Amino acid sequence: MPRTPEDDNERSDDSGGSKPGSRPGPGLHIVATPIGNLGDITLRAIETLSGVDLIACEDTRTTSVLLARHGIATKTTAYHEHNAERARPGLIEKMRAGARIALVSDAGTPLIADPGYKLVTAALEAGIAVSTCPGPSAVLAALTLSGLPSDRFFFAGFLPARGAARRTALTELAPINATLIVYEAPHRLAESLADMATVLGPRSAAVARELTKRFEEVRRDTLPALAVHYAEAGAPKGELVVVIGPPGETKFAISDEAIESRLRDLLKNSSVREAAAELAAETGLPRRVLYARALKFSRDPDEES
Ligand code: SAM
Image (cartoon, rainbow, N blue to C red; front, top):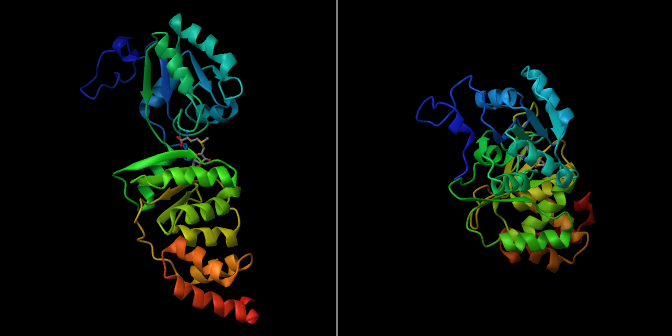
């Protein structure tokens, strides 16, 4: 069994934490950092970042802001997706020789849609101790604010950027009986939500934006209604997470305005029959009712203004 860094420390209590003020042990320390609010960092994370020999950072400039805020003077080095292959052997060598190295990403928990997985496996293979200072991650922050079931969830990371690949990925996710969580870029949100509405139907969902920051916002609605909202409002600013309820979870009712707006949108490129069929598939509402409404818009162009 590889030694853990904590083996070198006296246990302070049954929680397994190192004694406050003691130096972190040799090896790799995965350290979670804030996802926005710089106050969201644990006491152990500060002690670990202060006590290690080196901090491997996704972006040394980003991490330097956090370090300055907490008066930490530890040396930093870059470890990101573009230099990881080259930088990893050197970090492993240092730790083999007894160095204490912390890994941080720009925000949140390393390895979660961020670099670190290969460094952890390389360290474990080399018999180097790996420990973690858990803390913020946007996936859990979004889930806890979403209002959606939190007992079972599936984190799918970033969906593919292109429509066809994204719809294939969503088709694979569709049968999973759990709340789904994805990271998404703001400029792709509207089209991604439209694909989610088409593939997953009228499930309840939440778009959680700028979590822990000044303009934090959580918008809860059905997927079709959210798709309509962001198609009209345009790309939101900042970072965001989409949380989607499990199959059958449609507790945020779809509004009349959202139905009307989505129908107008669909009618730009489809016949009345096709638009009604598509929206019926997205929302689970009766096709007959949607057909009647779509017919009204298509016959009365003034309605569209
Ligand atoms: N490792 C990070 C974590 O633990 O959450 C995630 C890194 S990933 C490269 C960045 C993505 O996380 C963003 O595009 C966004 O989807 C999500 N994210 C990070 N911070 C966020 C925040 N404050 N509010 C909403 N989403 C956030």
